[in-house]
Image 1 (cartoon, rainbow, N blue to C red):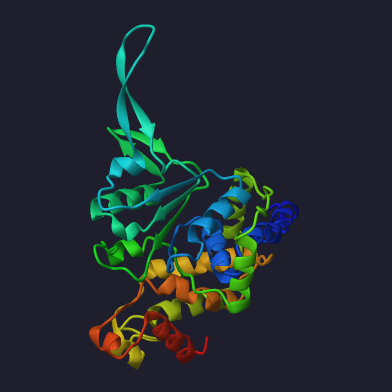
Image 2: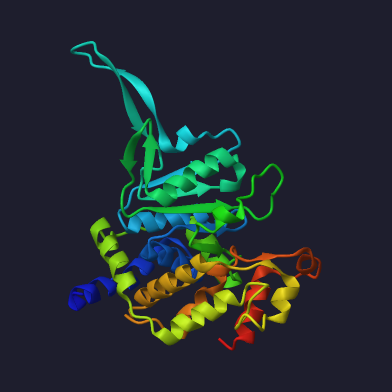
Length: 330
């Protein structure tokens, strides 16, 4: 591990956040979580009502990283080929020979915004998630590798559910983080109104190259985490399961009462990797308990399912996670 080189790279992360802050007012937690997803080499689901600058946030980050960016608006008639690409018949003008040429779709970009992913049928959703997981597109027996770094950010509108195709739990689990955007504060909203209704358009500087982002992703996996914190993550994840708790013999009572099922081992892997990424984002080379607590909700909220009793009592997954953290004194 070239410590000096990595320190120089990590010291530029506050500059990246400052560049994004030129365009995006507030939403600091969401910005951090998107950057954590990038550093951890995963993908995220972004949920928020219309008008919270989800698209602008993602495009601004891509611009500050000089990464190619594509946005796909998901609709009920969108087909897998519209995302992945398709073959077209071409002709060599010199020889007259005809041949099929694969035209790459919008997924062949460093950052892909899958806007309103729950508005397209399962066949198209599955094609996107397969490419997201495999980092390649297979067409007519030929593999086409996707560019690196590669980040998919899928968005959902929590208000309108009519005519949508909710992602199955197994596919939700493929997203590293489930990020929720809330309304800005009064001060932040006033700043948005002032900043976005004039002629000023801030110019963004490029902070990292693609190669440097890949180096930071490599560094993230090298960050130290103690056995004590590994045990903490393991207890937290296991305690979300209705059949188990801090030990198999003593399940957490309210989890057994409200939970349909809990998080699997992938949740623990995600929480550890994201905690390491948060340490890097905060210019540290070791995970601390705050990293785990801060990321428990975006890592677990889409990996825990509640039963009808919980829903009838107004219990949400975030409420359950809060109570588990308190129960375990984490």
